[in-house]
Amino acid sequence: MKHLFVLIFACCLCFYFLSAQNDCEGGLFDCNLYVDDEHAPFIYGVGSFDPTFESIIIWTQVSATETLNEATVFWELAADENFEIILAAGTQAISETTDFTAKVQIDNLKDNTRYFYRFYDEAGNYSVIGKTKTFPKGSTEHLRFATMSCSSLFSGYFNAYRKVAESEAFDAVIHLGDYIYDFVDADEEVRVPEPYPQVPQSLEEWRERHKLYLMDPDLRAMRQNHPMIAIWDNHDITEPGNPEQSAASIQAFQEYLPVRLQHNEDENKIYRKIEVGNLLDLIMVDITNLRDIDEVISGAPSILGAEQSEWLFDTFENSQSTWRLIGNQKMMGGWYAEGLGIPLPIETDGPVFDANSWDGYIQERRQLFEFLQEKEINNNVVVSGDIHMSFVMDLAVDPRDSLLYDPETGLGCVGGEFIASSITRGNIDEETGIPAELNNGLASVIMPLNPHHVHNEFFSHGYGVVDIKPDSLVVEFWYCPKLEISDEKTFAGAYVMYNGANRWNRDTLLTPTAETLDYNIITSVNEPIQLDSKISLSPNPSNEFTILNTDRAGLLSIYSIDGKLVYQQSILVGETRIETQNWQQGHYLFKFQEQGSDRTEKLKFIKH
Image (cartoon, rainbow, N blue to C red):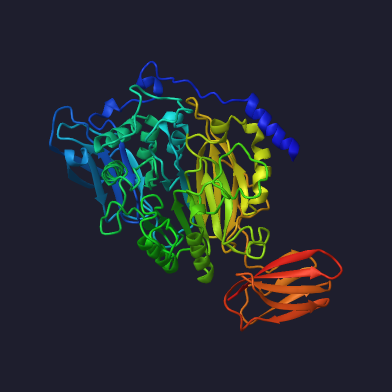
């Protein structure tokens, strides 16, 4: 271990990451930034947002060539790309009040259907043709989403956006915040246009930042080809400390990334649920704009706020879907630094790496996880952004307490979390100069302190994929270069969670069997839990009793989910019937210590 730290710090001295020089001396075109003049005045493209099984929101912006106070645009929705079968059409008034953006909600559509749409003006100028899709209704066998966050235009090229745009496999794109950046990081000046961008201070400046981003053709292509579901984070908006600037940034966000508002049309409340057939509830939360405004637990700061917290608990309890996918700006599951002993060249917030995440609100996180356990709400997967690195982790009430969480059996898990790095924003190598070759060394130091972490990767950039079927949910890592325009795309592995398991499978890092990424991983999770051929527990789950079968003698101890000893008995070889009819419903840990040995087996048990 000492040699590892010596190597890390030696590399810090010998390898200093030099950010790519500004490649934009020749103008915005050299930055891969230019508007769509061919489809003027719709030079910033089109987009669609927040699909349901019967509705979609379509968007565009009109760049006026002369001073206008208001105007009218026309729109069409078709079943085919040639617009031979037009299914719906209408007009939309636009004005300078909303920066000449058009947001049209089209209802009464057919579920699980691909549509084409476009805008045009009174002079007969047409926008680019957009593609969108409604979600399925009822029985649903398969869904596939791209997930992403932290797309600093100044820190690199949007190659990842282009690769997502080129795929026809996605039902929607989920953007988890920091879609735009308010400032240029001085260590990551890869493509910085002139004049040098300043932090927006007014509504007009926030609007101009959105327009600057939409000069990127790869971002325009992604918005054109897939419906988006987005939430903001701290670089998209000014946090509530400055009400006037906060209101300006929120207005610009809503103008350029429309959100389907579900709470009395309040633009400050973007938390929402979208049902996707009987397979998924997509639950988008907001921990950026509503944190610390009031208390959920007396005397403790709140990351959700009381109103959103009540909504979230009700949403979980009333969910009837097989899976719940929770879109969340910052890491929920925890990244512990306590116990490192020797400092690493990564900043920490005391015992955790980032107290600005859910790690700064541990009481509220515990309350949420315990609620999911108590109500036996399974199959929860959180997708998060912000951290600029890649993680797969179990979600557990207390992952460092071996009585409450066991990474082998999944005791204490309420679901899992998936974080797919950043599109471009810097991570370990940009911040410290440590080369990517030391990723495994860093992981070997950090992961033992975080037993719930299944996968860590600290250096790559790209996007994630969530692939959902009734029996399983698979997450995939896809990485793309960012320092230059590139067609390269690398599949970096995948992990699976089985229906009912509530934890990530550790058996293997999945690789696709074909370009279609058909993993063929259907298995049953209702079989008796059996750790080896000598000890088993069945039936499991059970109601009135369960039988422990073992060929060895030992001491059996049974703990409730809160760590209390509820049963202890010496066990002989053979079958031992354990009555459970008077136990409370929930999860239990069976620990069997072999007589005359230090060996201990752990089995997870569920009482119905």
